[in-house]
Amino acid sequence: MDWAERTAQLRQWTRNGTRAPHKPLLFLYALGRFQQDADGELRYSAVEEDLRRLLAEYGPGRRTSPSYPFHHLVSDGVWEVRTERGPGSPGSGVGELRATGAAGRLAPELRAALRREPSLLGRMARVLLDLNFPPSLHGELCEAVGLEPEEAGAGRLLATRRQRDRRMREMVLTAYEYRCAFCGYDGMIGAVPVGLEAAHVRWWAFDGPDDVDNGLCLCSLHHKLFDKGALGVGEDHRILVSQGFAGRGTVAREHVLALAGRPLIGPRPGVRPVADAHRDWHTGQVFQHPARPVAVL
Image (cartoon, rainbow, N blue to C red; front, side):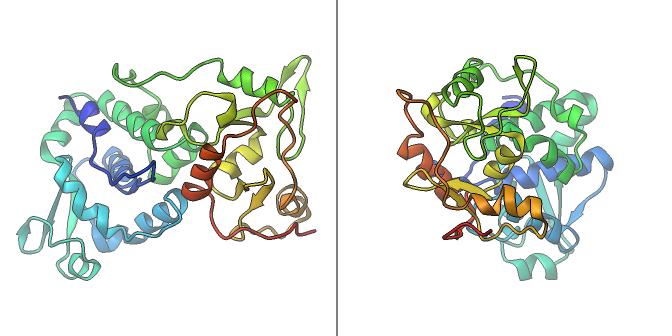
């Protein structure tokens, strides 16, 4: 098994499509740090806040300490931890990791492989991104962990991975008549839509199908906010706005906060709306609860 395939098979807690990106986030962070300093170690007490921010921003709503992946990633054979007492992790307890001066870094065999084949880093990063996060978040996540975007975008797809349906975007945009389902934006340059995207409701990385009833036509702004959990869709197909979203200016109030409670725009008659199962997945795994009960004007 090569390193890219091993990356695709990280052992993660999973049940009914539940997101558990804790190990992938640490692994991406470690790859970014390796790119900057191939010989450096990540002392837990020094990187704890960085990892905590990553989990808060890109993890699910339930909070998990960064100590969990710092300890458990060792079992996947890609990471090692040592303390002031010697090799081996002292456990997943925050106090133990801090008190023993625990430090981690990529496993020796992996570091050697990355030195021999620099392009391997890009392939591994792409696997981690594709299997755990939607494309709308890839660029900013690379910046957050210190990875060069061109490195993360390099490399071939694993032969065993399912392929996306390239018709998805056109099918979804047509179903919503080339309008953002949240705000109605319908901009074009000539006959070509601009700033409109097909958003997966249940992420493709978590078995979300390339079907119209798993898609929304969204403008670029609302697609990003939807994938970050600031926006969602309620049981009555009305827009949810997270109470965690804040904006002081008129634009944030009018283009985000005022959406709370509004009905979705579309799809056109005869087209299946977002399926309940996909909507429920997004509400449970991505949307940042609680929701604002009414629009804030």
